[in-house]
Every structure is written in structure tokens, then in C-alpha cells.
Length: 294
Image 1 (cartoon, rainbow, N blue to C red):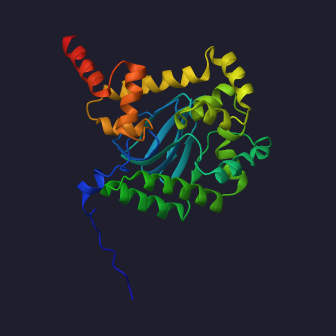
Image 2 (tube, one colour):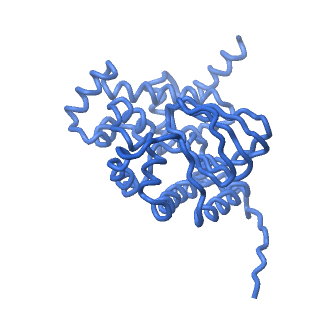
């Protein structure tokens, strides 16, 4: 007996979008994009890694020393954070851009690092990998959900882990090692480690733990590398991030609060008063006044 698939639409979209777990666009996650023939391509670098799944058309990409490489439908391409990147759509194209700093699962992190020894025997040439099943079905369902309006943070977190499950399950260790060579083929410097994880932590203790150093050793190394204490550096980055968000009219104060990792309006207001001179609502009003007076 044949099964007929019936297209459906998202039920209660307004209720979905007003949920506190509706995804706030902080860069990471899955993004579906379409391009017209001849359109230039760009990515949010150097903050994040990008795993591109080309679902339609062909593109020509330049990444660091590798220029003019052509990729086609049903190929995936890895662009490491910090890379020099540009590209162009050779015809009408579509891709899913998976943006991430590192796998969120500790198991996936360990699996990638365990492949480092395979990188020594393999040459890296910025090559793609074919999109194999069940990865193709996974991407089709993900695309359908995103285009229908399902954009919950939980969806992106679950799909993040599911993606690496398929990669480790249906690609050889050698393929994975070669493909992700830019992030597993070399030991990262202390500065690279800090920049890669900075957006995921809010305290010095969390940052030190991710570097696998004692608190004392971490503080000394950080001061040598950044010429300021880690606590002050984290605070400056958080203040800069809040100020940047407050300049974007489309973002509500609630959006900014969740994006910057605050658990309640009171803690967000208190932080802004202490470090930025006033509550976020007043700071935003001052920004608007300043912009109108220019």
C-alpha cells in the first residue's frame, strides 16, 4: 500500500515565535539560504566554523590559499573559522549553512580529537565530501522545518548532535580527518582556544576549565597573552556585545537578555547599571537620541 505524503504548515506560529526558547540569531545554528546566478557569497568569519551543505546548483569558492574551486549540488564543504573566504553562485543555488564553534557533545569533541594522528599522513586540499544518506534525508527534514517556521533553540541543539552522529556513522575516519583537518590537524594556540570558546562562557572559572589548566596557571597565561586579567577581558566583551545588540532596533530587551546569557530581567538590569552606567532601556534611548542628533 503506497503512502501519500501531505504537506502541512506550522500550527500556532505566533505561539511558537513568542516562546522564550525561540531561536535568537546569535550566528550559530542552521541557516537556509538561496542565491541567484552570479551572486557573491560571504560568511560570518572569523568567529565561527561553517559546514555548508549545497542542496542546489553550483558555486565557486576561495578559501585561504585554495582559489577557484567549484562545488556542486549534494556536496558538503567545510570552512574553518578565521579563513579568508569569498565565492560566487555559478547558477541559482541553495545551501544549508551549519555555523558552530565546536561540537556541543563532549563525545563528538573527543572523537574528532582522536583522529588527529590520521592528519599526519593525509594531504589537505580543501575538498568536499558527498552528502550520503541518511544525511540527505536529515537535511530535507531540517530544511522543511526551518522554512515552515520551526526555529526553536532546542531544534538547533538536537540537530547539531544528530548531524555529528550521522557524520561519525556513515563516513570513514580518514574522510572525517581530512575534511575537518583545519580544526583537528593542528594544536590550537592558547589565544585560538580562548577565542573559540569565549562566547560560550561567562566566568573565569568556566574559561579556565575549558583550557584544562589550573586557575593560577590560566590567569598567568591569560595576562601574558592578552595584557589584562581574564575577568576584565570577559567583562569588556560582554559590555561590547550588549551595546552592539542595543543598537539593533529589531531586538527586544528580552531577546538581548537571553542572547547574552542572563537568566532574568533583574540580573540583566543590574549588570547594565553596574558596568554600563544605567538600565538597558535608558541606554537604548540614549543611543537612539545620539543617532538622531547626528
